[in-house]
Length: 460
Image (tube, rainbow, N blue to C red; front, side):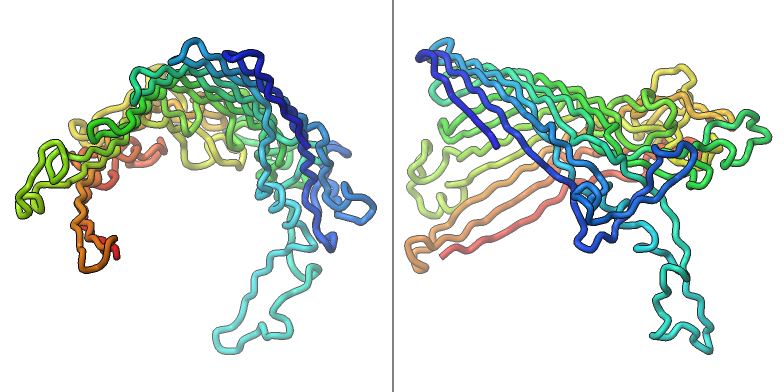
């Protein structure tokens, strides 16, 4: 349900108000063949709960969040005939696509089992009548849990921008945009063992986990993820003017979040860091330019043969220059002795530095900034501390249409020459980011070099 109103106070100021309400009940399975684990009722124990037809909550195994009220407010103000200010803020519900939730509640014994079928190479043992064992005959385990009372995620989104008309065909826009996401759905290690008291002689996992009957890798799907994005941008748009149209956009942004299970479930604050998609500087421009030479253009060519060769061409292009996204320096092997992945290296105190592989023997980072954690401990690095390689890419094309009257009024042949990465800039893929491996820090691949393709298109 929603309600919205636009209030034009005068010929300069317009206000927008709105309120939206969404009810997104969790999924139910028709035959109640779903189950989940309850870790809250009996601390230290795992209790299985199965779907039943008593109520919708019993069938879905997850309660319905009825608190999805989403107000929105907007404002538009005309400073002058050529300048407009716009701003707004709103709350938006985040769609839960269901993968993390449904996989857990549908992969529960006895509705989901795993079986290894072993047969002889000369005398087949499994036959059609016993090919699929029953749940009682096969092994089963519970590997995940859904928080039964979790909320739907939501996001605050806000922006402010100023638009100014520099000329009848040239528009300048600049402003700020941001959003903050709360209670987003993700998985955490709910049964991760605590660090061993004596790394030289670690206690068994069962003595260090909250739930001894569950696996150390047991995960919980819950509302723990959070994100924050802020950006200043400037945009210039040139409408068709003397054969040129152009749109260019520069963004200076920062994004931080809490994503993935992380390395230490007992210190979730350490997982707050730069996002995998944190692109600090990003410039992109797209343009179309009709060259002035040709019949009927600024440099009018009357000679049909000459016009067919150099007249009527169009140049198109997209240029993108951006800084690289950061990445984490990981370790291989269970150094912390907790049976879960996602463990990171430690810092030596040096600032992580990006190196030029062309002059450093393919080395793309300063190895001295990192160290291997001590046995039985987590690495001291945060997420995404190493800056990645950026992009400096230019794609261009030239196209010309040749009229073909014998195919009718619309008959024409278009000839296109297209260059991808036209300046053949080397675009490095980030180096190997696993510390305790022989190729740590080495760049082993790049993105595509310059590619040329020629295409023809016949229209009639």
